[in-house]
Image (cartoon, rainbow over all chains, first blue to last red; front, top):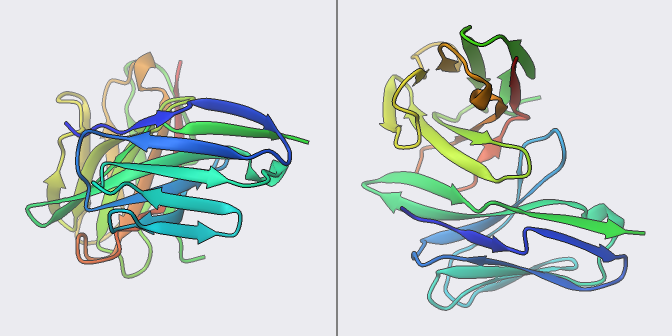
Length: 113
Length: 116
């Protein structure tokens, strides 16, 4: 069974601070995705990282895929209240031609004004 | 709006009743996934379907739960004889052509089941 562990599970910080969320697994994934979910809505894809060591930036968000493709991190610079939400990492595997996406338990981020 | 459509958004059932949740994938998508989310938790994979075919149901409970994606019409997740522990948000997601794509899943807004 493939498992993804996210840490921390809850994080509450002040506006303007920096933060890092981690997503770890003992399994290798063909790619890893980060989603953000607002209350009462479905998750929305932020980024997909595919290559070991890959770094992608989305404005103040920086995503990194581990060299061994087992872990990833999300770093937010100068957090803003609008960044508040549930951040989910998801590891993608292709098994016998079928895609499977396994989600971590999520990091609930609160940015206080 | 050509997004993934789920209905009902909210469903209340008494213990022992049946719950039927529907999902219409995005236009052009032929692959549907169902996930369950408990409060303050991530998404747990339940089942992956193509039209008229179940690809992976490894996350489905062995009893009371079933899913289908007929040739015509929406995908349906059916829960028979609901119990309080079935209370959760059920999300449907779709993708085009399964593995032969970027891997992005497009999620609906979820169906929230409450069992009294």
